[in-house]
Length: 239
Image (cartoon, rainbow, N blue to C red):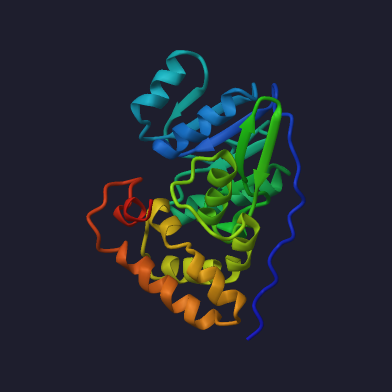
């Protein structure tokens, strides 16, 4: 069976100053997204029926507008961009995507690529220089590896050049999709710890099936481990 062709994204930097950006979801991810957007001087509206304390604090400081309820149709009026951070309700995901399409608003539903009209890259900044890294939505963990390698914060040292790891996008995408289909959720630290030099060498030697098997075996270790959120013992052992 021929795999569906992935979108070919056009990289672009947006001026969001004085434009309205809607974030749907009230957890830690929404906080991180809001904080990353505040410096762009966009007007941030967060819609959630369960806001965490950090979001309430940002609202009290007038840095965001907080709407304390679930999303409803019409919430995207006058918006330039919408980002869905809480994707636990598929009906809301689809409804947001539909309203965004009707209003010609750019839309990102985290980890649901077919409902996105844009994806957000991993970003490295130093002064006025910004580097954006994208894997076309195939592997957030790989994008993070690129970002941390470029910024010098990657705990795992590799013998291969960073661009050689781009050869892993196919097997990373396949295994990530399989895990999502099986409703197995892993933290990014564990996923990144499984992106190894060995995989690069196997793929470059045309041994993709073997590389895929090893990757999945190591990834599944993270489904039953006792690691804390945003941590990974495997990552610690490799650093």
